[in-house]
Image 1 (cartoon, one colour):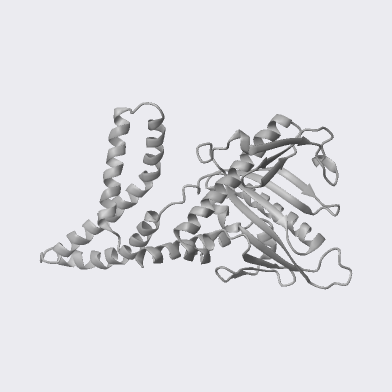
Image 2 (cartoon, helix red, strand yellow):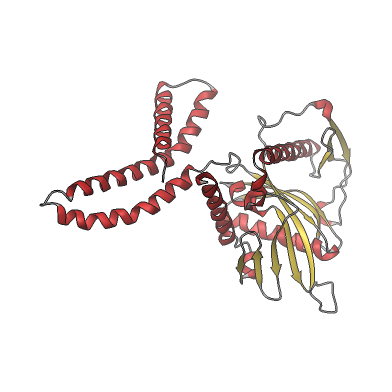
Length: 351
């Protein structure tokens, strides 16, 4: 059942925002009010549709008592009652608490795990998978740190993804991705199992994290790599160490000034992610088991190439279209993970 009092609170808040904006509140407040107003407007429309459905049901019930209108009411009531469960579910989902980071850009970090050269090659495959998915979504993906192996695999990659609802769509990708296939480096034709880790972090804003200058050690150095376009022959690469946390970030673009900006943004994002995890753990230990936990030590998915199979272990989803998945067709997986997380939150609220 949808909590009517909650709907009334939201409606009153929306009316307050409308009045404040009509008065033209000055300064930074107007931007904040406009953002909240814009976020609430679709929900207000859903509330309006739900209330109209309830009013139509009440009117149809009253029509049953009128002999002239009873036949029409008997036709309308089953239709209206059939619409009610779906309308309630839609509204309940809209009322779920939103992760404020969902609309933000994200940083994706990919590193090889167990499996040596094959793990590094698979890390490269995952990067290409996310590049293709980003392209299909109309997002902009920029690689800001890239270290490759001699065989063309990846030692480490950090990418920045910008677009609509980036973190909301990619946050379930954090964890250990396992691959089962015959490596190109293996002459015997045996299936190997290797892994790569993916971390998806919501980008920090300046108001999220304050960093003291005394807490930083900044070094410039010459970029290193396996060859090609990623090698830099000047001392422009920047490494920033955040002394209190021990976090070290690097950026190897050609401009030292730009590298400092990029490295500081990555550092803020990692510190913001640490704080988010700390708050989440303090709030509810039992949510660790849910799909949105972001536990990067958890094996979340297996890509089995001989069978053309992808299995997401968190929701027991198996798809026999591995080629499409590796080509960036991730919507079916992400939609299923999102629905499972929403169902868990609804059960938590109702419980």
